[in-house]
Length: 158
Image (cartoon, rainbow, N blue to C red; front, side):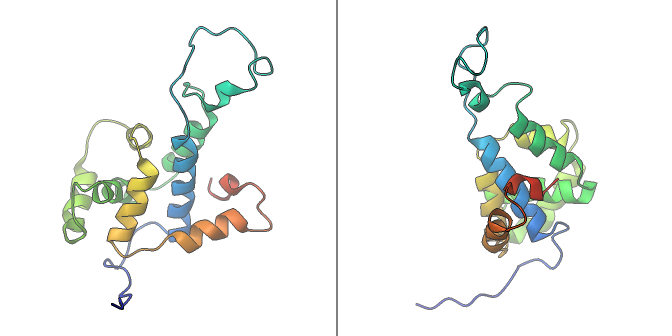
């Protein structure tokens, strides 16, 4: 059976595919972090083969980078990320996009960057949400990761 690409189901996402792809890549980087194994550890990084770099600590650079990127977005873009996440994890369907977005705009409480960075599988939810809305971020992610002027793909989105 042949499927026909109909394009995005919404006209204006409020965030570019490139910015969304960069955030997804940062979320994947942060998603590789594991719980802290020894909070009272007193060795230095060279003694423990830099294992601490993969542990979730308050000063974790992957979390800080993800949260800084989200904090630098406009309110409309942050609300779009929250709504995309909700669609991606199944709280809303693609046809309920307007409801998800209005609920995200009315959301009160936790700072958006902290709310999203605390969410398990954030990158997967964002990718799934984009896919549900007919938005393909695969090419944008590949471009960020393979750009010859960008040996560090995480530097692409600040």
